[in-house]
Image (cartoon, rainbow over all chains, first blue to last red; front, side, top):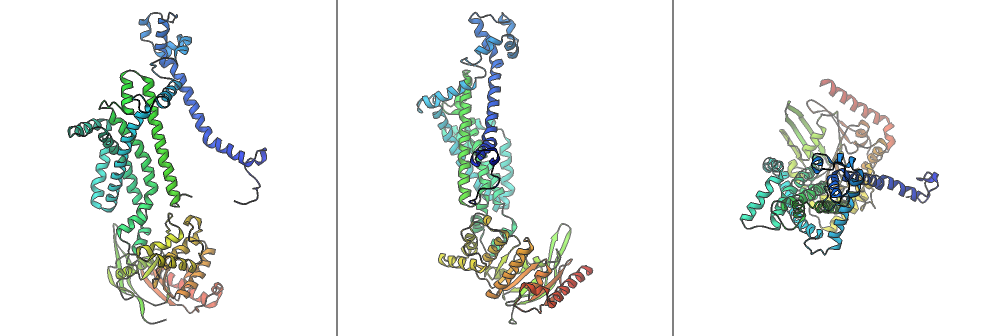
Length: 333
Length: 260
């Protein structure tokens, strides 16, 4: 940076300091588009609540002796929510956001439930989402660790052995074509029959989903050095192990982190899916399942959001780790 | 210049088997290189100049004839660390500093850490990059990166330096400077240089011996011993001797093309 002010600083001509202009530009580039999209989604969501919840709104109103348009319930039965909302706009609007079990809960209802089940309740309470998120996260983390380790090991084998290259990769691909929802109950039943239950079966399903992106990314990463770089090491008389530690592994780091981000998201899905068929009593999956049993839509949506927030935080954490590591390695400018 | 050849190729042949049939990359190559010589290999693409260098380095295996490097087979010479190799691209590791890149061969060859530090410092001074040890490759210009890669090849003090179009990707101004510096480096280190290039002025300016090669099959069409003095300022390129040698190289290249 020079000490003199640039002749044409950003915003210099419009009476703002360069710093403010820069901030404004950063805002318009970064935050503003995000907020616009969020606002649009929220508006659409609120709007959708009216017709989605209209049948229930009209029913509640008629029970409270408020006049509703087709008076007889049998006439209303075949009507769509949109038609009901159009014929009873006042009722549909006033009851859309206050139901206990709405078909589509409004954003604020989900937010309140999220707040109550995280901040208000003690984390040890069985109704606390923090408790359930922790149960799911521990299985996710274990599965992610197993999957990542397995993926890296297999990738190293594939890169160094032609036999493994020919034999492992097709199976890895085939393994991912089987729907996890079909194989998850089998894994749980088989492991249960040998006396393993609880965290491990869920972690196994997590690992099953997360090893694949890691193996694909690491094979690509370990093979990323070009022939010139390999030849150079050969001229030094380097051993295969030295080629691995000094060239292949460092070259693969950007690929590894890209894989880890995908792998973690897959792990979380695996852990949640692993909680569904067991009728597990704890975990975000269990929370989703219980919510759908009892028509607790608000609970379902808040569990969904908890899972999404968990994934976003974790992937963000991996991204931060990546930036720190790559910067320390001098690979990010 | 002593008579003992450092590199001796006799009837050297190399045929690659490809899907389109065999390709004769080197045919009956005979060449002796004495200690301390600066030999340039020039010729069009496919003439086998890089292949010959790779044979010397033990990166390709000849299919016929004999080749000795420092009295050993190329493979033994490679294991004895008889040469440093500079590629067209600098190929520095982005995750290592300049010093770390130069340390790379020393780590593999098992030098002690004090020896490593000493050699890194020395070779950086040799290529005029002192003070850049802690910088990362992306902080250096293309010419500086290539100098660092030469330092990396020099760090373990091998008697032979093999250079495969090291300045091919650089602009002419930088290339002129590096050529001048390379001559100084050669004078100071007394190494045997094998230098592959596409450029006639570069070959004539640098070399004591110019090997003109021609393609299909790759072979030597002329070997020119340069009459130029060892002391070579850049403006020697306007002298009559220089132009005469350049002319002979050009003639050799043209003749090789006509036969093919």
